[in-house]
Image (cartoon, rainbow, N blue to C red; front, side, top):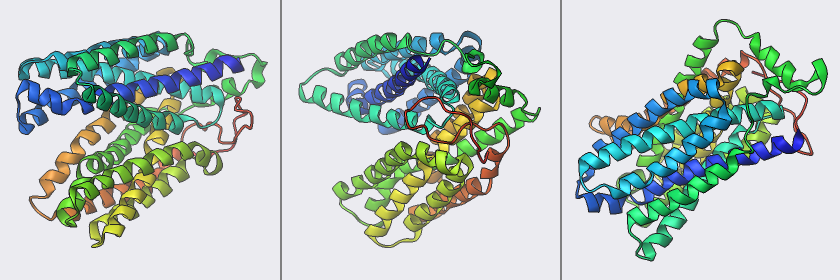
Length: 413
């Protein structure tokens, strides 16, 4: 059991890296595809909406499907389809075909995103301690990997379609190879220790969740929307803030996003250990509060060092928030983990897409740096609402030296 559980955890890491790599492969090829199709930035922006709509639709389909068929079927199937769909944008020669390709690719990516997160919840349940943030950290690793491969392919003069097809083919083999290690179903049915089995006891505790579960999941989804709106705003506006507001050179301005992304990755690598010690509610509350301080420093600070410090605090604070919300949604009802994660991830994804647009519209009213005050308010509201993690069943928060499944322990949520 221990060996198979470790294998399932490694396989989950593989799918998170795979998802990040596939999305990163599309991102790094955007300039070349834009030139090939012959479209403007404005047209590309409109087509990217189709990518988001496809992802949202895929999330809503894959969640209930994962609950019905099991992660071992849906996760690898989604991985294979997403990898195959990666080649489609590279083959497009006109805006209509590119739009359709992005819609399909977005749908498959949304299926993979939700199904692998639902499986991550099951793995976390079986381990009896937090491991979700580590999975999310490896998604960023996939993006870095895609950047390196894409840069190498471009330097070698490889056509975008050939590069994306090659990455897609490697990803298909990876998705199939990792499939056998996935858990066959929710660990709720796994019991080798009689009534004292910790997994069974934890799931039975979840089963006692009050009928307000749906309401609680939607509240978690609203918090995810606010947190991911902040993340989306940082992705698109951090570098422009340094360039336009603080008159930083383009090379220096680029480090603003790098600072934010690095801080977020480091935070997610550390978050699981912090959850073990302090609990999910504390990580969400203190993290959102830290993010509020960081973005306020960005909004009001007139110095370059203040901006870099602020973006670092913003990334570090936000890093642990989304994994806690996804985890709480999945644990709210083990029998509907996929559907609940799809609700939280779907609404969160809407926030991710809306963030850049909300900031952009706000610049018509106030200066760019002052629009970030809205992000301060959203982070403060998230910190105030963190008590939502106190309700519902707990999952273990004590470390285990050997990395084996642990006995459920006291938690604050």
